[in-house]
Image 1 (cartoon, rainbow, N blue to C red):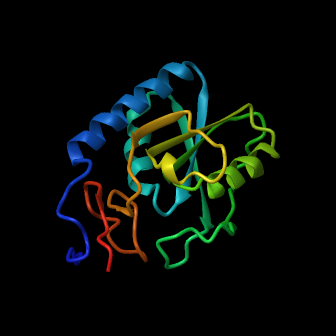
Image 2 (tube, rainbow, N blue to C red; image 1 turned 45 degrees about the vertical axis):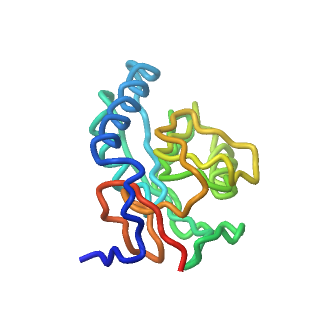
Image 3 (cartoon, rainbow, N blue to C red; image 1 turned 30 degrees about the horizontal axis):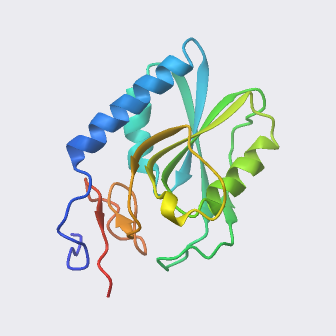
Length: 178
């Protein structure tokens, strides 16, 4: 059981709001890539619930793969140093690739991943994030598909964690300061 004593009781984005937005994003991706195959690249671990819901909302031939990167450790602030812990197993040259991310915060991690993957010559490379926190941006990067813009709080739930906890909340809330 998840200990919720450090999580705000305020639900920022409900389960229903999340599902409606995921369905909307899936419909838009389906329209944008009509008749084409798409490779979804989930950024582990936070993107897993979102990506699972998103791939069911896309009515196309899709394949999936995952990357694991780290820039946080057990802190609530990004270290700014990006390390690839697990790389793709699928070649992406000539493929339509959508990076699936839980949240765009400083943008440092996503900017690094995007540049790294562009070097592999995909046909197209886009970004889909369920949450965007533009107030914390340190680099210029934008997602092609965005669910919700959130304020500058440490967000948890729906895959987002603090030190590997709270990922299983079916809604989005925020972590109270200690």
